[in-house]
Image (cartoon, rainbow, N blue to C red; front, side, top):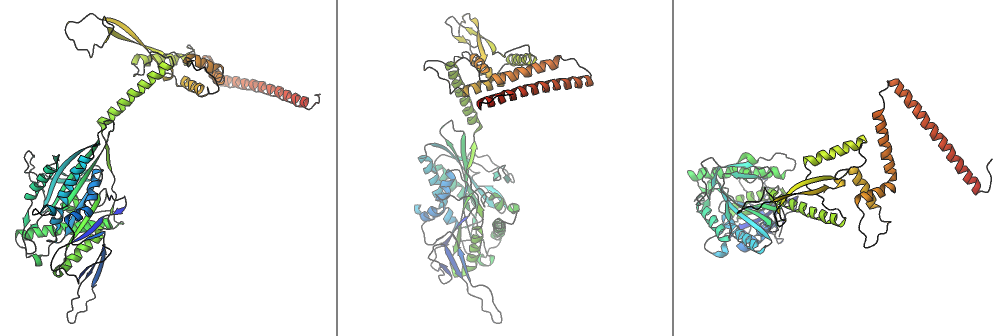
Length: 569
């Protein structure tokens, strides 16, 4: 499977129509299988100096000359189709002059099964892979768009049950992610290859074709068959899924009116076709020039509909169809020039991954339930029974705020666990009954009401206490417990921590508490008196500090002199 990496170029291959009059002296395929050389005779008019080039060389990604339809699909379409099943957008399109074999390459012929084109083979590949990949559930939809004389037409509007759209009701609109879609275009779910092929043949019957000197069955419009693929994991816990769009494009051929002899309605159609292809080439030139910021996608319906296929988030492959006769050498050169410019366009394909919000909510709810079960097991092992991890009620929140306020004011020494009393109704056999969810069935027995006590964990109330408990827990590596002993209760562990390793923190908290109480109870003295009082206090503290410092230095000196065997005068 060949999937383009970000920053890679569009893959371009050239295919020549089989003909008995192939101009071997003008068109040469080099042995590397990628280079096409074109030689053109100079116009030798008398008295005219012709300085035009007479030889050109085009290096592409491959040459399809005298190959079967199966080989064409293998080298052009299979990688794009497999990439679409993985979540990458893909586009396969054919470009060339009228009568060069574009429709034959994309759709094929109906006379022989082996002459199927890229589109039916791609549909077959999609449903074959869907059957093989049993670990994923796929959803496939089809749409078939025709652009005729700058008018959008739904080729599957005639399908039974399809809502009709009035003239002018269809339009190309921009999507939030930077792509485009066609408003009013019908989207048909397909579950098998047979249904998909029936829709393809239905759309082909509705296409507009005409006849001129170069082609008796000339396509008079551009057609885009889009396969919308959505893939989901069959594991319900996985909320992610991928989507992709596979665009299979059959462009109408460019025409030289002097050679086709078109007139009337066919002439008008040729003018629209040449105009749209000219704007398509302008868009390609703008995309190939990295210095340009603006790309004229909205000049025609064709370029606007192909906006997310021309570079960007898409894996794009172009087949340049040429007519290898000497009389068509100018059209061949024009097609190869377009192909070489298309090869300069860069792509940035990425997997279109999304998250299903419904499945994501289910996954998170299941994860919360598992975490509650884990906490329940932990509380059982730690001898903490009756703990509740549900959302706090308004009464519990008010009780917590009251305890915290009293603790800061000094009227409460400890913040206790918050008790929640929930009424529970039981029958004679002791089974609980929920009056909100219990549906009455038959005669009701009298129920007795009990009160179920639950407690909010202490570390859910006071983060400081929980920090102290965590520090105590992390520093228990040097303690030895018997194998049969159980962890101490939280209150006992907290008291041990305050008496041992947490004594310094406990002292600081008590001193701060005393200072806060003193400041609250202190009278509101004038500013100068308070400043004088603070100065006296600071001097007293400094005096005490210096006294203790001198005493400590004396003790140190005595110890040093004694260690050296001397004496202190």
